[in-house]
Length: 99
Image 1 (tube, rainbow, N blue to C red):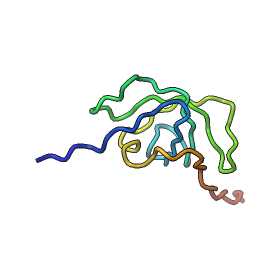
Image 2: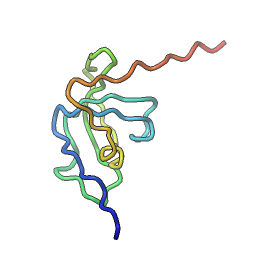
Image 3: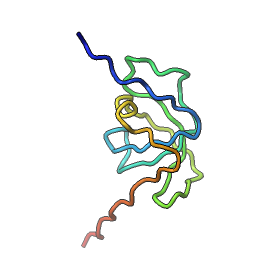
């Protein structure tokens, strides 16, 4: 018997995502994102990636006004990338300047 994948969470406007580099295409670093729009009405169970539009969240709760359009890994959404309301991204370490 094959185990069914975990259920797909609903991505409605205002949903908060916490995405590692491996969870979204062509990004660098950890990304907190407040969803504005999802590129499809229903995410197909066979889909690997879904288009999401939204705004970056900073570790102190600020929201970047510029909109991002990214491809998000569907497996990441099933495995905990959807965060509760009020969640904030972690403070990331800043690399020392190159000498």
